[in-house]
Image 1 (cartoon, rainbow over the protein chains, first blue to last red):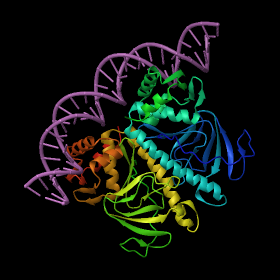
Image 2 (cartoon, each protein chain N blue to C red):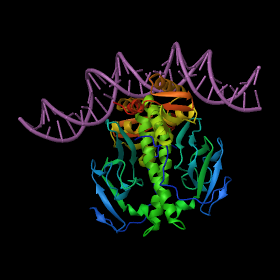
Image 3 (cartoon, rainbow over the protein chains, first blue to last red):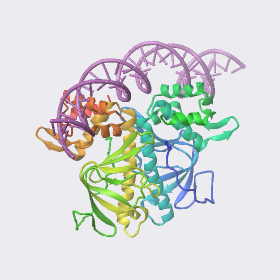
Length: 226
Length: 226
DNA sequence: CGCATCGTTGATCAATTTCAATGCCGGTGG
DNA sequence: CCACCGGCATTGAAATTGATCAACGATGCG
């Protein structure tokens, strides 16, 4: 299965206290609500925290001097974002939808103490991330546009799809250009491929952001070559 | 700077005992010589060790069911390979040239004790790897063939090039098809781009494996668009 | 020496990008 | 309330890049 969007960690430890405002849960972690469009951190920022996504969707991006942009990942609930390089963040991260993230002090990643269990979870998440990124290499380098879009929609369907009688309802909150920059395509190609799938009866599009997967097997068949 | 080939760690801790045969250095680490063409591990193998490259070059690869292959990274001295996912290796790894690698028990990555310093180094290497892979995303998704090859040669030159009066001598021990599978191109395109650079006077090729960078700036100009 | 593998080159083809225009929708202000 | 505006999505046609198909050359090894 390709296109892990980002890194999933083991089931969430139990959180007792929750305040809908940014609230300190303990000195180790605290909740942080985040409105759509707001940045969580920028490339080059001092990395104070790593974040576990509770709700919503985030976008991790890197920009080249000349303006070309790569979406590194879309982060969904359960994913961890903000792994530092040295002391700095090496991507921009902003909220595509309203989000709630759980911030962990960056020290939890660096040191076993005082919370060895959290340290272990975050380290595992980092290792998982490496594996997931390697999957994404396959996606970027050896798949056609149709295979990329099919895989992409399938992953979204598996992770946030809601099964219904008429198919799997999938929210696609990111813009077409984000999908393009994630998959190494152009906006136009993304559009065309969506319409191609729509005309083939694989999906329907209520709006550009609301899709229904009507033929899961058909979509799977397009996700892998042969 | 794009195309970090793999993960560089901090300067090597001092090693006193060295045996040219596979030799236990301590219960935490041991040297492992490896001839060109030999595998260090396979995809799906139980991950017993992570390896620090001392000498030589290794190839990390993933293969899809249908035979398509992605070279995930080329590992050079200072790089770390074999980060596990769960308990398993998720790539094949074999030696392109004769190598010497330093094996660390996988537990050094999982646990702080008994060697917290090593644990910290390996964890950092994993984080660095994430960053390096994100660089490679840019390479794979938003660069032209010429930009990819130029970046690739530049990185090799920086990491293993030997400056001389006539330019920077660079060993390119991997085959063309490996370069192609690394950059998401075909063998033919890799070849053509090399000849194009040769005809433009940017490089010379004594053999397919021995290149001399004659115009560093020219090559840099082709590595980035604009 | 002959075979096998790898590298190189050429010609054609197909996929995707590019360029251009139009449509759609939500927000804003008259 | 409605018209206009701006951003995003979609579609079409042309251009370009890189893939594919095919042949040949070089190199190393049994």
